[in-house]
Length: 505
Image (cartoon, rainbow, N blue to C red; front, side, top):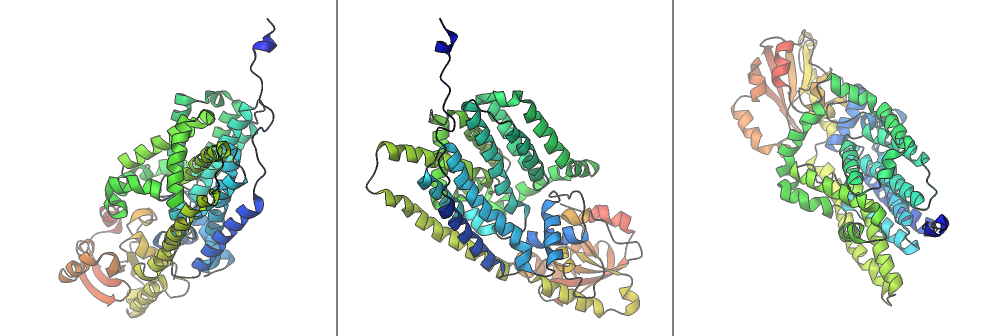
């Protein structure tokens, strides 16, 4: 019999790719950008944001103990363009958040979603709780969701074209480039890669692993990520030690594993969480979505790992878009099979999502306005305490923050105030090194009372923080404004002896 008769028919080119709903999607993304741009002008620095700025501006490096260099260097670049402008500093974060909304819609289109599904996907992206909360902060976890969305889109598009018999392996090279950039932004993308690899081995498409350009893309990613990998290797892989720190902070961040398990889904938003669950189910069960089942398996693997290790409740945010897009395709197929006269009701869950996202965005401004101390005030008060010292003592005095937060707040104000170099034994600052041996006096900047209220009274009654009293003979509090400031004199031992004892993650 003729072999052509036995061969399955090849699907027609682009059998289900619909036109992009450009203007509705861009309008939604634009509204998100405007909202976050307005919020950018209110409140002070977020604690991780001021750390990014201080690290990138004063300590540029190929890597850091707790994140790769992209976010710090980007923050420093924006501050160089417009020194002191918080709005300009946050512009890349705002654009990344708006672009993520567009990617929700693009993913829905790639699955075969029509105009309505694309707009609904953009609405889900716009009303995600996590993006509403952090969408204008310059931090690694603000840029990560967009990067994961782009990686997902490249894989979905490759699978679709491969099914049609017109594979475009150039997408795998682009995947490698984006993966390398993502690895230089946040190391959790390595978990995504591992989950995707296991998922592909379990359910396919295994053919992707036999494509030479796939491995070429992996090589490109490794070359791009090499600087931060080498930095971590030279410093004993401190990023791996951060896992224990994250797990220890889990009860405060998300009320432990149970809270993390819930937030991993709820951070997708009201409508987004429902669509996420629908999409996960359909990716596992739908015959039409069978080629993309590996995305559901990878999502489940990531979910289980994050909960088991007490990870951050936002670690799964980058997978929300692709799973939601699959869920919207499933609802579209149901709508096409049995049209409803009440189609407008699909937008009702989004009204609740908009309200929830709005509350998260307002919570952001309240958090930075009230819960996070004024970094300029902390720097100003530190400068006043430093100026009050005798000139000969100032020459032997350094500023020491009890945490990377306190140190960053003072350091970003160094240009406005007459301050010496700033140090801290905590987190990334601990790897920036100790003061010089000529320094025998420190101005110690403690945690603001509202951030560690239970320790303030204990420190006061004990004549200063324990880490100071162990290494200095005289400790006295000289200020109690935005943050308590202690003057420590009479250093005991050398800094090379002291630093390893006080350094911590």
